[in-house]
Length: 258
Image (cartoon, rainbow, N blue to C red; front, side, top):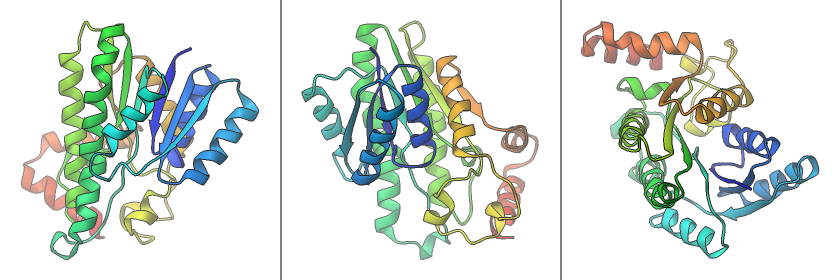
């Protein structure tokens, strides 16, 4: 039986993704900070599917946590065939007014932990000539983001890093997919400090975490390099290529602050 490691599995896209793997008979290692939510998810999956679900609570924003997670999984004798780097968070506000501690945690989680987990598990996947990695980026990856400068920059890293290593891994049996969702019905907006306006205007209908998870799951299995969820998001993400960069930044700033 193959096994998937899903970070940020306690809610949102990560939680929805867990059920998709279990439905296909793939075992799970689920991790996040909220151990009680993970245990509840484990119970729900066990009532529906006959797959092993291992809970490992950890905070991947802490220095060294990704390598500790890898060692923990190795000590349990679990082989990871699918790596879903879903954990991440954002923060909103003018950069000079943001807290360094929060920016540091964001960079550690969105960039450092994701990169470390890829470097930990890819050699093992290459040796077995099979591995699938899904790195959750964002449509934020395609342009700078005034009022979310650090978050947008971290997601740009995830996109470019994923494309690069996917190219490096051609012919090895290991693939890397970057999933780029737009605004989604998750707790992201509340955690990032958004009000009911701007890009998260509550009058808009956003796709559910389940919809985005299904889209990303299929892209992972099809070994696609980069996928953007939703036609509108696809157009917006790629439209930046048609305009001068200073226009793109100005338009993004207007969208983020309107």
